[in-house]
Amino acid sequence: MADPIFEKPELVAVYDYFDGKRDDLIFYLQLAKELNATHVIDVGCGTGCLSTLLIENGFEVTAVDPAKASLEAASKKPFSTRACPQLSQMVAAARWIAPRKFRAVLS
Image (cartoon, rainbow, N blue to C red; front, side, top):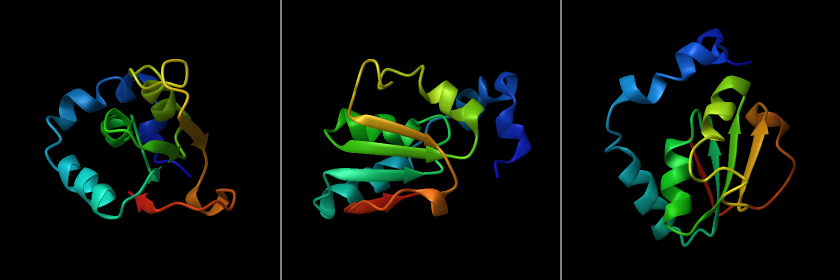
């Protein structure tokens, strides 16, 4: 179940602005590279900041988040499924993800 704050589109719309520059995401990018991952699952992807960085660096990404409003915000970013078909978005709790093989699971 999503935190109620992430279900409100008007709050999700400003989330990235208030979150600021995400220097922490470089760590996850490097980790995925070190694992030789090609397909990464981004659990709790929120508005898709990490997913965007991973896709820009050639990874296939499955983005999962229980908050539909967050995924809708993520779908408006440059990597959306219309612009980048390698992204698969799911509104789901992590325990409901269909069995697949991933080289890296990041959250």
